[in-house]
Structure formats: structure tokens, C-alpha cells
Image 1 (tube, rainbow, N blue to C red):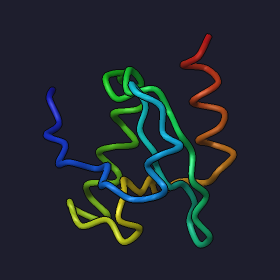
Image 2 (cartoon, one colour):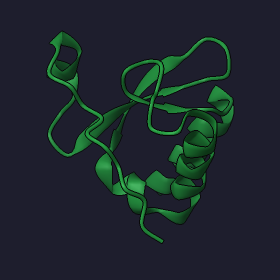
Image 3 (cartoon, rainbow, N blue to C red):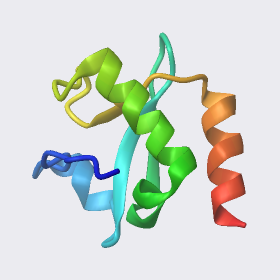
Length: 85
């Protein structure tokens, strides 16, 4: 299953701290926290489940201007730590 991703990184002062091969995502239910993740995570099945949830909730109009993941911060940290190993 392929997910079409619109351009999620816009030229701004915030993108200067995003290294090549990474992207910034915003995570949280009420207060959003910014994380910088490797682009390789986007192809992982566990992460794609989060992308599907984001698409269902926000479509392709993300309120933070970048990719917004609608899950608890702890769940996201747990998932990304599993993907890193």
C-alpha cells in the first residue's frame, strides 16, 4: 500500500534544523510536540498505520503546517524506539 505524501517540509527557519534524510512531525492530542524522524520510518508498516490515522483525521490539510500525527506522545516514542532497533 502506497501513501501519497504531499510536500511536508516548507522552507522556513524551522527546517534548518531538519537534517537531510529526515522530516519533522508534530505529535500529540492537545499540545503538539515536534519530532524529527528518519524518512525511512515512513515506509515501515507500524508507522504507516499512524499515517493512515493522520489522513483520516486531517486529510492532507495539517493544522501545524507539517505532518501531524494524532496519537499520544508516549505511544509515538514507544513506536519510534521500536523502529530504531
